[in-house]
Image (cartoon, rainbow, N blue to C red; front, side, top):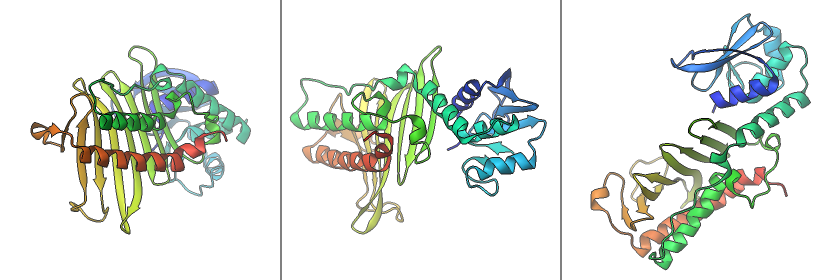
Length: 307
């Protein structure tokens, strides 16, 4: 998943690195932050990794940094060839360059980095699911399930959850977070666990809650992608179900979108053929929402909660 620009900047600010003038990224040509630790400069690529420049990081220090993560050579989660891919990776390398490394220091710095990023209004509150008195009981049940899923896709907007300190779950989950609190407040969160992933995006262009899980059905590996999103002043729940991941176009595949505002249902690219959602379609959506909720709780949220 790599390290976002926001994660890099927050980590370097928490560490106390020297801020240098912004420069164009090494991979994409737009302005990115640049910091110095001792004689080594660190520049974000503009994509998902950091590049060291100027004075080279010695092979000895790089090997020591990799060994802290059980990595014997570049190409794993934290370090690649000439690249740093994680918050704990850049903090470990920075502390080693200045001769003050300890695991406790890096853990404390990583924890403070994510606490700083999580202090963002776009992620501290979830968006309420559209409600209307004219909805049928079936649609109201569907909306309730969508709200339950949303509260897990962005658990930081769910005040009923007692979430651990970030450092207590970072080693069990792959975590990516980008936020902006100036100008238009926005947040982009991705958390990946075993055979499950949640994504929450909220910016000036709209918002989306996305849950992806793998499961088993009829002795086949199936895949569920559930997205609750806002587009063109509409609010939609979208189910993409692949009944057999080894087969394209399986007869049991499901492609279903339901508007929470109009009550219409349609397949992707078939919106002109939309018709009122049937009870059967709503039941199908609720069934797969329940599967997603169960899997996300087991494979991601369980690692994040204080018991």
